[in-house]
Structures are given as C-alpha cells and as structure tokens.
Amino acid sequence: MIFNEEYETLPREALEALQLKRLKQVVQRVYHTVGFYRRAFDEAGVQPDDIRTLDDLRRLPFTAKQDLQANYPFGLFAVPMSSIVRLHASSGTTGRATVVGYTQRDIDTWSELMARCLVAAGLTKNDILHNAYAYGLFTGGLGIHYGAERMGASVIPMSGGNTKRQLMILQDFGPTALCCTPSYALNLAEEGKVLGIDMRALRLRVGIFGAEPWSEKMRAEIENALGITALNIYGLSEIMGPGVSMECQEGRNGMHIFEDHFLVETINPDTGEVLLPGEKGEMVFTTIMKEAFPLIRFRTRDISRLLLEPCRCGRTLLRMDRITGRSDDMLIIRGVNVFPSQIEAVLTGIEGLEPHYQLIVERTGNLDTLEIQVEVSERLFSNADEVKVLQNMERRIVNDIKEFLGISARVKLVEPKSLRRFEGKASRVQDRRQL
Ligand code: DLL
Image (tube, rainbow, N blue to C red; front, side):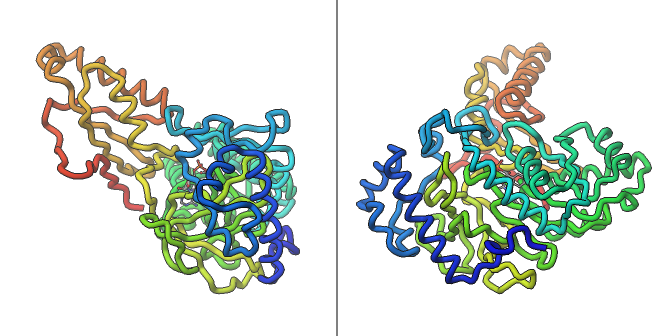
C-alpha cells in the first residue's frame, strides 16, 4: 500500500518540475527572512533569481551543524516565534545541541511523511504500534506517534526504558508493530528470553528501526529473535526527525527518500564536490517544504549512496543505502548522539584532570558501553593515597557526563602520562562495536 499514491509515484519529470518550483520558493523565502542565508548567499555571489534549474542548487552554499550552533537556539528560524508550535533538540546539552522548530503546517507535513513510512512498512488501521522511541526533545517518539495517528494505527506511547514493563505490554496489548532502535529490539528479545517469554509467539509482525547505525547481520538477528520483518527508517532532527527516508516492505533494500520534500545530493566530504548519483559519499539535504526551519544544502555527515534501480513497490522516489559511517567523529551511544568534544568539555571543566583521555565504546550483549579513561594530574595522583579521593573523582565525572550528555559511562582514572600520545591528529576513540 502507498499512503500518498499521487506524490510517491510521480513520474520523474513531474517530480523535478515540482522540486524546482518548491526550491525557488524556499530560496526566495530564506533569503528574505533569515539573515544568515542572506549573508551566505551574498558571500557566495548567488541571488535567489539565479536558481533557474535544479542543477543551480549547486551554486548555493552548504549549511553545516556549526552554523546551527552559531545561531543557537532560534537564529535560523524563518518565521516569528508566534508561528512556532513545537520545539525539539538533538541530544547533547553542551555546545553541540541543535534546536529545531515547527509550525503547525510543518507538524502536519511531518505526520504525513511518517504516515507514509508506516504504510510503506505494511501497517494499516488495524495495526497496534508499540512505540518505544523516547518521547521528549528527541524527535523519535513524537514523530512516530503523530504518523501513526495520521494513518490510523493504534499507537502505544511507551517511550524508552523500563524493559520489564515493555515486555509486559508486548504480551498483554498484543502490538503488531514495534518501533525502537535496532539495538533495543535485540535487548528486548534478550530480556524476554531470560524471563521465559516466547518472543516469536508474540503478535508482532513488523519492526521499524533506525536512529543509529545497524547492519544486515543485525537485521537477520532481530528478524529471527522476534519472528518479524525488520525495516530501516532514517532521519535527523535538523531535516525533520524520523521519516526523511524509509524502506518499503516490498523492496527491503534501501530507504525511499521523500523527494517531494527533500532534495538530496551526495558529496565528497573532503572537497565538497558533488558526486554522480550512485557514488558513495556524504548525504546533503535541502528541505523544500519546511516553513519554520528550512535548511539549504545541509551536510548530514552521514555516508551512504543513492540506489538508482527502480523499486518493485511502485514508488518512483529514489532510495538511499544503509548509512555506513560518518564523515565526522559523532558517536551514537544507546541512541544518544555524542561528540568526543562534548566529553572533553566536561573533563576539562574538572580540576585535577589532564586533557589526555581515551574513549572506548563496546557492545556488551546488545547494549553500548562507554568507558572513559582519563589521566589525573601529578598533584592529585600523589595525594591519592586515599583511595577515596580517586573514587570521589570518578563518581563526579560519571555524574557530570550523565547530567550534561545524558549517557552512562564507566570512568577509569589512570596515572599521569600513561595514555598514548599522538603526533598528528589525536585518535581518542576506540569504537570496538561490531554491528
Ligand atoms: O535519530 C531521528 C530518528 C528517530 C531517525 C527515529 C529514525 C528513527 P537525531 O537524534 O538528530 O535524529 O540523529 C540523527 O542519527 O544523522 C544518523 O547519523 C543517525 N541515524 C538516524 N537514522 C539512522 C539509520 C534521529 N536508519 C542521526 N541508520 C543521523 C543509521 C541513522 N544511522
């Protein structure tokens, strides 16, 4: 089934005509309402009237996450605050957080695109959807919730955490669809098994998983453990939240991008050069329908490629492959986006620590773990006959990391000068997860 038959199956020519019309409008609008874009376009020597074809998109400058941070919190909004009905933010409360706003029409659009995703996964009004994405500033919970209501499924607003309760609801309410991160799906399966629940015998038949990288191997594991079809959903707060692209149950290979709302380009992350369709690189999106927070050529830092073969589901929308990496150092730990620089900011704010640290990320069972190894200063170390001093310090770091970044870490204080030093670019992260 296709939620919006007309727009999801447009012939390429009609789609491109629509895209061009919408692109011209959004470029005019941001130029006249957002100081940042006016300056950026002027600097690049391009005016809204210069956009005559879709290829002219390339003449516009990129927008980076740093631009969002520099205009924190609302500086890039293209409408007055009175027109904003919802705010969300990407995870991380220090430095790197980005805030996004929606008008009522943006919420309606997002709900429709999420409804398209759920219908692409085979959901109908008769389905019950267990939504275990976190509700709150994170876009996952509410984004999926509104989409489910829009297409008419019964949504259970579980939110994240409390696995035992989740398992109880899964048994008692009999949901037919599950939304959460892929690692949490495996975690649910594992915990269920421990409690003696036959997870394959639940009514679940389909799962919609995303918000973190996963693999075909994980897909097979989840499908086997839960007896379901597992599909991939992609999105990011800046562009909208979940629902930028979604795998269909017929194709199960790559996610259809809602190109009537988002223009996609693939670029070489080092040079910014636009690559040919199908070549692997960094995905760049331009929103052509958003009112409150339009983004022109936003660099996602996500590495993927476009899949050009037509899909048997009948949608004409291009697909993108799984995300295979990032062109920056962002980590996603238990669904929370974390930059090493955010951890560094917390560590350097604590007296008695040296700016030498290592981050070790592993997956134990199905859960991500983060260990922070950090050197203590000579002074603290020589005063540290009392084990208590070091223990207190460790506890403080754990608390600060939890408070500022929302993630649980293990902290190991190490002797001064004991961690590896780097001659060139420091490589402070060891990501040992094998997905
Ligand atoms: O994770 C939105 C979302 C919610 C997507 C629920 C899917 C489901 P952010 O917190 O802003 O938004 O994080 C966005 O997560 O740039 C990718 O690096 C990563 N990501 C999202 N979906 C996938 C996926 C939400 N399917 C960042 N595969 C993005 C791999 C993904 N990585």
